[in-house]
Length: 449
Ligand code: NDP
Ligand code: 2IT
Image (cartoon, rainbow, N blue to C red; front, side):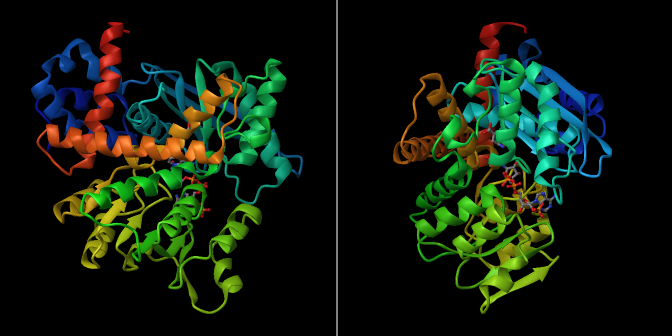
């Protein structure tokens, strides 16, 4: 296997065999393994006691039936998942994804990534992820509510503020968290605010959690740019997606003086050379829950919509893929490099294929991997847990200041770790090793568990 230490090869072979067909999970594990050779060369004890094998095996995997009744009175069945990956550093923590593409392999890749990401935040949170193959598109409010209630009816027995704390991800935002929390409270007869994050402000949510992932990713890219004495001012940027992460990435880039000229959904992309109009974008996506194609009709002159195609063909200096896994291929990366991209920050989880990452790194493009760049969302979730535990509520400014500090620390930790291991500027290596070392140290302290 290219790039993987020979001691790790049999471990990887066993992970691939045991998790046959789970391609996204394989991809996430391989990327981390490519970095771990340097750790075990320097600190061989981390290869002892099957520590790496244990790290690749989730502590618990839950799969359950989710029956619900649609508006036509028909019974529908979906599959629910929660993969409780690693609790060495704290309760399992990670989002819930509702999307028709969800399967066990995708939830495992996300749970694996989350374990390292959460470690990088420096906050006491383990890694987990869950969700369902439920497709919210086109479903009524009533259907969404009944689905969430049925999902939580089963999931609640596995949760708790000291056990497992879900939040949102694709297809799960404030509305769904409200229904999930309401059902949890009703079933358990406990107002256990710290059992879910991303809650509404009136019932225990944190200020700045909605904005946190996008804001945090932009802070991360800003720190990367600063290493080359550059910033966002006046730079053309492209942000894929138009959901939670994309919207607040666009907002923060604008605050930093950058100009976001394109965003997308799974049907196509919009180009607006005058800069994406935030108020209009929020109205279409957060209020009307409509398609991005509507942007052009409502915005009028200057904007255009391209059905299908690749948003990465739009020339830009900063690219922030913020939709979904493997949305940016080697070919897309080559187009971005040809058009002079300076920095790429992953707002989504694993949006760049391994080929794409190689293209960026070989071209000397600043590349911030998701587990570092998008950690601001889960970090602010941990701040929400902190506020819930102390029955407190912080101001927006205080919360955002903590977020900014956490993102600076993650950036510096990744950069310093990469340099310590002989690969300055390699944020992928830095993130994987810095995350691994925290989890591995705690697991080692616990003995064989
Ligand atoms: P949302 O559901 O709010 O938005 C998702 C966006 O991505 C939509 O524009 C959606 O378009 C697009 N998208 C989803 N699936 C696909 C697909 N298969 N192909 C093309 N486009 C797709 O989700 P978030 O913004 O919360 O999540 C986006 C990414 O960020 C995910 O990778 C998530 O794991 C990651 N992330 C989220 C965090 C959070 O706090 N929410 C934290 C850290 C990472 P359409 O409407 O057409 O489906
Ligand atoms: O991928 C992620 O980090 C998230 N979806 C956020 C998880 C969380 O618990 O806030």
